[in-house]
Image (cartoon, rainbow, N blue to C red):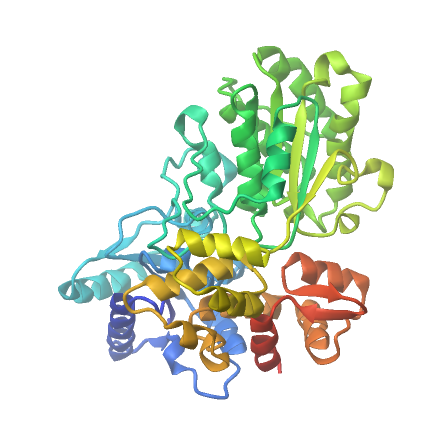
Length: 508
């Protein structure tokens, strides 16, 4: 039996427990991978992928730090992918002085699994023995299934709320949209209100609108989409459909996708129907809405789809987006039924990659909001929220390094205000800023792991680093949607100086 131990380097208790488990399992004769074993010069991305592919037990340590760790998420995601490919990998979560909610992607992978608890150093031996005992039990089907949409709606866990004094979440928690009572919790003290917020709030006041929010990863699309729903709620009924929580089984066929959409609609609108509908075709869902949903509504209805890129590349993706365009067109064709229906979509990928027929695309109609990284003035506003921690000159230096990347900018402040944090000079220094365990290391390593999973995209990004060009327009749009590159005249450049420095080293 081979073990893989995943943990956050930002937590000393996790590091101590990880090393204890490493030594204890080795003494029992097991092979163990812990990333401190990777020697200088090793290709750590391939090393990690190799050990994940060949482990029989994946132990993940969960703390207040690791639940927001992009690297921990990436390792769990890859382990789960190998599970689905038929590899018998058992995942054992260990909560380390942490009893709170999990980040929503972690919850989708770990929500069914029984976890172990570690609160004090003398718990270490008990945790070790329970892990050894657990691996001797047969691996059951529910131990490798990602939480389905149906289970997700009934998990009942509170979402992780943003907090100035804790690591910022890589993305907003979409469970905020499923809060009891139907009221969204938009309580992030660090949210920067941009001009597009005002426009979106105005769109929410009207009925029969289509809103498309475009932008690379982690620039605030999901946050803006949820705030649009907040603005809609006084006069409309809202249904938020986050495709990122759909499992591969939920997305296997268009029937699976549409049936799960129908389940979310029933759940969110508190419509009781037993058994739940079985939707086979796009027309079935349209007729179902007309016959069984619209007639029970007392207010106009809003459908908001987040992460619609999840449908990209599936055999039915054109049919699905044609359906959304059909709903948009129905407002004019059947105003008595569809006139007050609103549709909102959030996407990272350039729409032409999703559907190339202009008259069948929902992305070239209605209102399109393009989200960009923070401008320098918006970074100054964020600095005020943190009590002017930095001088204006330092804010500009940080902006030059990160080019206003919203998540990384917020992360930079967190690493300066924490008790064992970084000085500003060390934070932005070329060596420490791109170190794999530096202030941005978790984010950078997770991006590198994602690129490793897509060799064509990795090669395209390497060409950007070396030559300032891409092999194809398709590569540019995919890299741009991932937030990795921008166009600068005739050149294609990394999206910020931090990426340029790290990936020049990391992809070489």
